[in-house]
Image 1: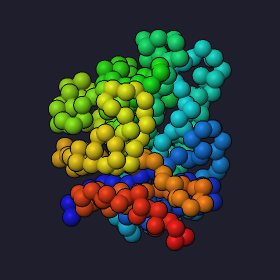
Image 2: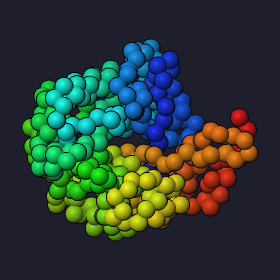
Image 3: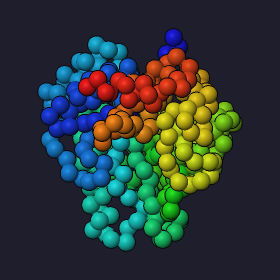
Image 4: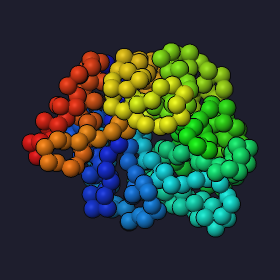
Length: 306
């Protein structure tokens, strides 16, 4: 079976910390993973459990998970593009600095960040605000890399074009600590044709440089190309399709780049109001390079046992 660096979003809680993340990833058959260090919708953060972190690092080594492929995702409420409220803008900068310190304490070297929304300030001003914030945050030479995520272009989101990302990267002084996270759903929804991924990579390489791609979010999309809506779909059930996603995942130019699933959880009918992650079965499909038309039902049947 051809090697692929594949994982998914997993949960992080204050009791089990990084160890809980690692155990969850192993249950899915993953060899990497991504997590928030706290709730993505707020800035409340607990103390890092150093003991659990060391146990997690040992467990990763035991199961051949390279910690350099593990990703932290910054909370999506961070918005570096709008500085109308100076106090809020400065707090956001301070908080992201704290997230980088948490990443260091967890020995994680990559943190994915949504660039932000200008909220009627205009593209040029919004991009300048992001650059200013990143130059404050990345003033230390060494430290985790911030990976700017490609966005769908919903509302006043920035980072929906390679040119916008290039502007940010060009403005950041410490270029060794800035990279890009491609998101397949977002690229599709932003209007890029990812059915010809080699051509897209060539375009990215000319504008930014393929060496800046540090992570890829693998998601199908509920939307047609250019919809600017950002609605993820399970692998093979959306408009991008299984075969196109497999070509991206196994692209030779990106074989060393970690791929992370952020696909929707699946509800279980029959009185259950909870939803469950499909990652075990999606990762299995990806490793086999064979689409499973029973993905949803297999997921439901699996979780009904618990």
